[in-house]
Image (cartoon, rainbow, N blue to C red; front, side, top):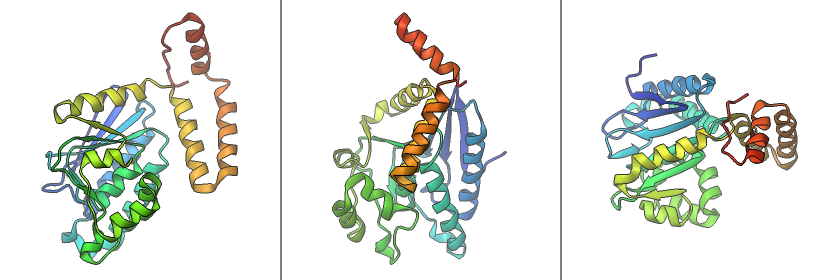
Length: 256
């Protein structure tokens, strides 16, 4: 598929989806539908083990909803809300590579990813500032931000439209990794590669168990954990992991 507002690339087992909708990588209907297609493509590709999401241009990871496409706001919101939840429950690790502003729906996308790595640039701002224009976070922000920073801080950030720089975001748990700007691409590659080397089936089962517990409750999470554990007993990767441990070498997982 050809994309107008995205750049989709791959390196080994890692796929990268780059938002390329200048000037602020906002979400209009065309962009969100392209993104839905790209997410489906990387999910169905068995050779892809990790997904990186980034923003082109260096200024914005994503500034959220494109107000110029207000006539399609309902469809954009419904699609984005479902997509962000799909990423939150994705069977492959998803990394948000934040090298620019992440605002509104853009930050909601980042906090739906499994990991967030940000460049330590003081001018970058992260926040859910929807109330400034009389609306509210509606693509998962009211639920996922408290999960990361706690209820009280999330409420302050949302009600007062507070923004934070990457260093503070790291301190409060909003981002997982912080690096110098000149190291950003190397750190993203390093994190993605480390994840890609993990056993794919065990990774998928772990993510599914975590997701089931979060969305469906403890009992369902424990059942998903038990199903995953049973499935993994008969995999080649389990055998390889045991052999590598006994032979004191790094395992080479193949996803079978």
